[in-house]
Length: 113
Length: 112
Image (tube, rainbow over all chains, first blue to last red; front, side, top):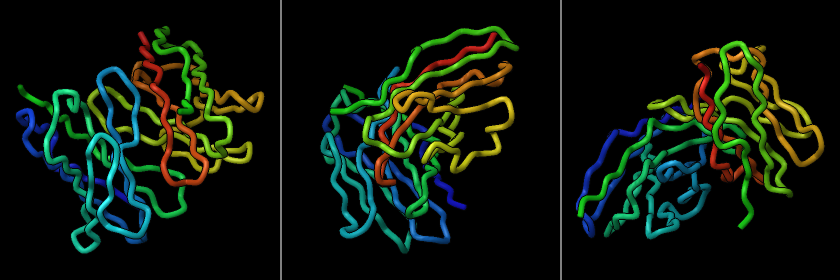
């Protein structure tokens, strides 16, 4: 079975500062990895995904993530955040070819002016 | 961009009543899902549906839950006799190639 741990429940940062949201996963088989964002009172939007190939994945809104197989991590980064990035961020994993997604607990990113 | 549409956005129901949550997946998608998020907790998988049948379900998805795709466009989740602990945000999602879902904006169910 797969599991996901998001190490930080809340991350406050100042506007225009860099941010890293951490995600570690556990799986005995090859996986796909995802980051979703949930803005207040909205649904889940796909930010980016790793399926195969290059370990550095670029997504929407200037976010990127790096798949590190040896450390079983898929941390999300942005070099300069904006107030509009305030949201809950969820890391998720699925077994390759499987339908079910397993989510982490989420990280609430708060941007302070 | 194509969307997954869920209705209603909010529903309040009395304990013991039946509710039906509705979803219109993206038209060329083949895989359909329901997830739920109890306030302050993780997003949890409930059920996946492919080729007109359930392909996987979680231990949460017991006999009080059922899913249907009645007309080739809608995808519904029925909860037969709601309990207080069913209060949650319910998300529908669809997928074409198992490489990243599109989620709907959710239905907030409140059982009183």
